[in-house]
Image: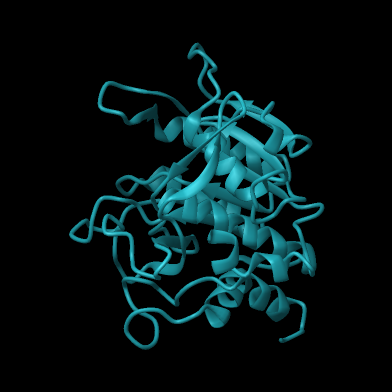
Length: 276
């Protein structure tokens, strides 16, 4: 249902992300998955000495952005820069990584020409990461991040709450908010994030829920916008997504859904000077 909710079939008549580099800072991904055939431009591993096992989470996020076989990736013609900042999950199920690893991946992504950086992870505020994101923003990189799944009572999580980052929350097939989604005034837009079919390592498929996959979808939509406007700034990307979003919940922008559900086709039209 995600592709239809995001209006991707119509959007792909205008753009598919061709020529756009999207960095995925995550657990790494299974580059051999049929959904990602021809999608990966380059890879980087910030985890020296940690076994390089294709990540389940990273494979799912990469597919949500650029799947091109059975799944409907948001930007099926985009090229991916896979940057591994997180290793296999610990006993508590949390992927292992640090600010140092994330910053190394971010720096590599910017140096490699990424126009969009997808960050489907969340945690406390971090000044070092904030400064690195500010530098990336000054260079025209559009950063998208998951709002987080720590529940409605959670304080804002980062990097989604960093100024200039497009924070994405998740909704279900009936346009209801994901119960675990973090709320707040920093939430920019909403995308489908409940029971989403995704790619998994070794050619597999599974269903996942969370703001992570919603953020990956929006990262792909931003790639569509950049294809139409190569000089698109982070502020212009946010504005295009927000002004064309379908309002959900209370009338107008709110801390649950932000500006509302992303409409990829309308957003593409907004940056290319065309309307429906």
